[in-house]
Image 1 (cartoon, rainbow, N blue to C red):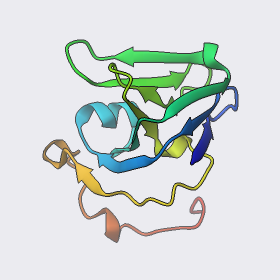
Image 2: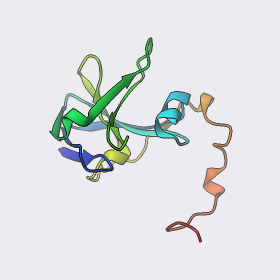
Image 3: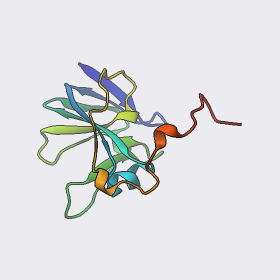
Length: 133
């Protein structure tokens, strides 16, 4: 299956040809810093091919030294983008960057031991279809 995605400004467009095997919501401090939110929503694929269709020169990469933690992002708008693992065998795709339906729901909340102190009872917070007035 081919999945396609892009950044917020539309400068970077990619495709991933392969099966998405895992979908995790990561609450570790690094993923919270990356996303600016309670967690990062990442899909994991193995054995597929990540192809940059447009804007590859705008893709920047950052790796936390001494760790496996890394991220790719658009240097224009800052949107999170996919990256291949160091061994090239797996791909991590930020779920929010996809333009296609994945047909997969999150399978687990991970690193809950380091979640933000305010990340509790969020299912009880009021919900709105748009910005509340």
